[in-house]
Image (cartoon, rainbow, N blue to C red; front, side, top):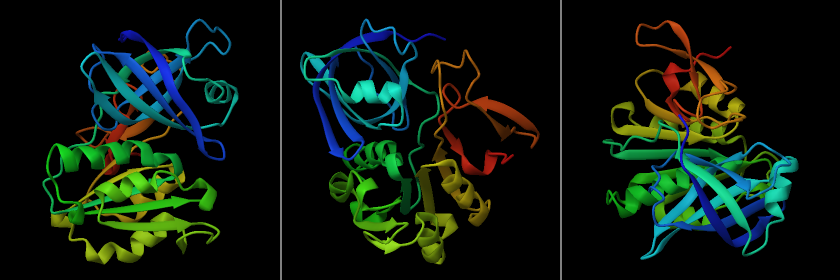
Length: 271
């Protein structure tokens, strides 16, 4: 199902780390407030090359009297994102969204654990902010594990510090924080988290999510935001389908863009 397309104006586009950009876009007041875990499809207004829009997670959102402001956090990985990185203040972009039916569920548990790999910090940071400001969850009850290949890939820590009382930083090469995969650091602490009183939320590369699946049993509540290549963002092209278990435990396929991107970890079938 097609979503409305909004014309936005870039008010900021800054390289905060090598190849990592933070873009701030001003949008019309009619833009619907996104749920944590949703995303947008963005393209440069009037530009036909590259034709396809790019999916980007929503990092922050605020509403003013006459317009809205949204921050998008992205990494340059190809031609499309390289073009987006070159936009200057005042550039016009076409934004479709917010997209995705799947979003993070408000936890009832006392312990809230976030696990992010690299750019996966974007949707989890927005969720942590919402929990603090709108649901009034204590920052002391929230723990954030953030991993990257090196210190250069660690982004968003200053913002996470505002909402989470406990932060564990990991890098593969040991250039910052613990020298470990973020999943290994979490596994080391796993016994501290009572499965009956803990909610876990994760976003990152597929190997990271798969590793979590191997260490968490069904007693744990865990939702994950999947990172998949998307072409349309609304489920029409079926290019982002992933294998899942249905209610009867049978294998089926769901579209990350329209059925997700947030799913229960226990429902994912690893092929």
